[in-house]
Length: 167
Image (cartoon, rainbow, N blue to C red; front, top):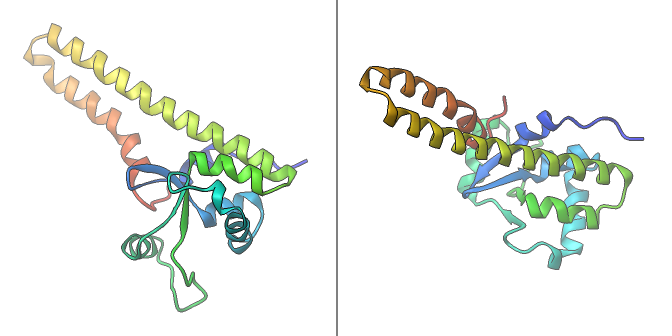
């Protein structure tokens, strides 16, 4: 049986790039227990399963931004090509091209992480609506309290959206 895969660990690897929540090929390869080269070769052999809304390659600028955030070197054994990223649908499709018990377990964990992230963001939107309703009922002396609550609500979402930052 495969080792337990932490949803929290997976959530830390989900990035926001081009307004999509994605995972890097290198992070996915680590989770699947294969090399990045093996993962990308499996995808290339099944290219028709991965349209642009399932997977895309980062631009040179996006790659440079990631490289600077992770402090990786291109010249000292670092990556020689621009990374690929996979959307939630792309990760789901990986289960059809990577055939192992570990791939099944990883896909289940990754899908749960994406769902949990979506629920968290949705609950923050619902909470923001409710906060707006309450603010209308009370006078301006509570404005500071409402602003402080809004600030607390936005903190987790900002951590998720920062490209390449792992906490």
